[in-house]
Image (cartoon, rainbow, N blue to C red):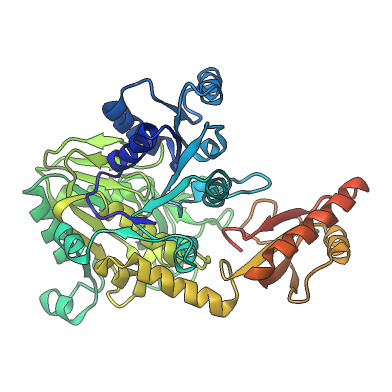
Length: 492
């Protein structure tokens, strides 16, 4: 488990690991979340080894080149494979190294049956083919912590003193110190400390500002009573698409230029949730002489030059600055932590860590949020391992993965019940449900779809999988209604 430090050139280090493996006469598979990461590692390998020692397997080049590269790997002409999750199955000869970068990224989880996660696929290949296994990231997933705490893997990390010398991470929020300096620190979206950090960073080079939402003003509320602003035609949420545009419904696009609150009659609106476009406008007014760029949605920038500029980006769309960013500011930390999903806090720490990882050595990072939140405290200490251990302990108490194995059965009530009756479950198994469909999911209007949860201790996971496989085989032979089965899904 490689705990990458801020400012480390991880594509060059992964390329060096693959080059050493090739020099020993063995092959490598490097799996990355998306094509932007593939491009970076591709460039690093080309610079180190030349153009004729590796192939890239992902969707961008098209089927013809993809198949040509696949044949080159299968015939042994190429020994290094770089790609997205499908590259994990590449038939590399004499495999000596498998690598996964940022395993917490949801792009590593295959959304189609049988829903494998590339972290587990590469672990199985490592065991089966006698290859080294390297998991690298700026953050730390709970599953990676499980591999580490079980003794299957060990950690590679810089000493704490070296990490502290690379970056200074702080939090600006409603602390006593912040309120003494600025009495609006608890309510300001871009408090004085964040403005000072941006100003200091612009004297050194480019500055990155991460905001969790795309758009201009994504949600509106009554200025007086804080009641959410709703469309009079369909009750959908109102939003703004630009500084001169009237409020418009996000569901039916009906404009509402003369909106008034049905609760208190006020006509004023406030914006509790802002997007990257509005953030760029605010920063442009604060620093009128500085170029402000955005990177989000379908307008993602890959790189920016080292001149002084402000880059506003959403998580995952941050460009790489030549030489690194001087300062990284993380806005709206409360919004990243506001979800009720199993991995909300873990995902927030991962995205913040990836952004701070773009800081140049000696740079600074500042998060705007509650200084007392454990996730922000972990970021300040750069203690992703400790935060993952805390999350793992909480899941162990709640008997959630990876401490336990959970299988979800989704289908029509009769089909789900039939599958459960055919299962020869271990004595430790718990049957939870049936549960109604999640209203937030597509197809939730089908009230005939239900879910059942099966939970066993981690040691009985193999028995649970074998029982489900045998029951599904019998139901398939009888051509009964299908039931979707997922083991340890990312979200429950």
